[in-house]
Amino acid sequence: MFDTSPPPTDHALMQDSAFATALTLCGGTPFRLPSGLLLLTRSVAGVPILMLPRAAPPTDLHAQLTQAGLARRPLILSPERPCAMPRALRISPPRNLLSLDLSTNKEIRRAALHQKWRNQLRRAENSALRLRIRPLSPDHPVLDRETDQARTRRYQNWPPALTAAFVQAAPAQTLLFTALLRGYEVAHMLFLTHGTRATYHIGHTTDAGRSSHAHNLILWEAMQHLHAAGITRLDLGPQTTQQIDRFKCRAGAKLHSTGGTWLRWAVLG
Image 1 (cartoon, rainbow, N blue to C red):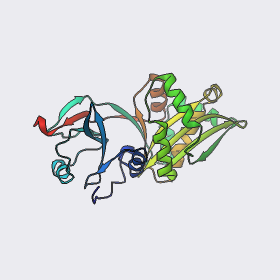
Image 2: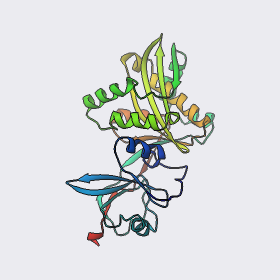
Image 3: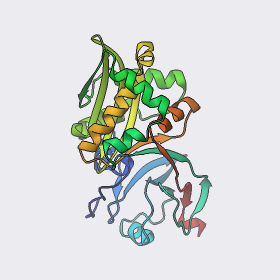
Image 4: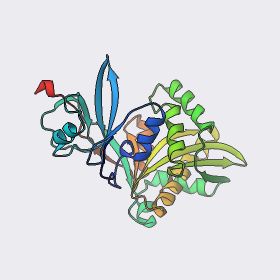
């Protein structure tokens, strides 16, 4: 490690100090460049590689890597937005990410809701649903539910140990919304905050939660809660299934393209 500048407040989750600490607690060895950007380390087929996730490389990247003694290691770059990428080879195309603008007032956010989404929210607001908001505990059963759900639906998310380590590193940066219907838990959504942004991390629902539109109520109330806490943007992740994307887009989410994935390695010139 070496002296660094603090990361900017408007940064992705994978550039947050709590994420770096969580990786360290799980046995990882992340690096901070002098500019404050976080580099991850991994071994592929016995070759140690670096990754710069969700951030545009600084113009003096080579100088910073040299200062850190890392200039000759292969580096995978995956910027959040399209940007100049000199001395790098593209290895995968851009992806589409969804996010909600929370910088506007409540009336503008409500007006941005799709009519069907807004009608579902109104029914949830007028139902017997009640919300509970609290930080996540490292041993909360919602982590086991996420493991089971990911296995059943065949998608990849953080390992439960990494989420638990994030909770240990920064419990105040976790917000678990639980919807209760007549005292029974019917839905959850977990959000992680990072600077002036937040990320939707995991969510679950039951048949009762779906029929009562619990996730509409949770997401809407999370938007208000996060806005009041100074959060200006809520990241909802990449495009996935048509049903999930429709739910997010009808809540007002907009698409933006990443910069793709690139390989930078000195031996490639």
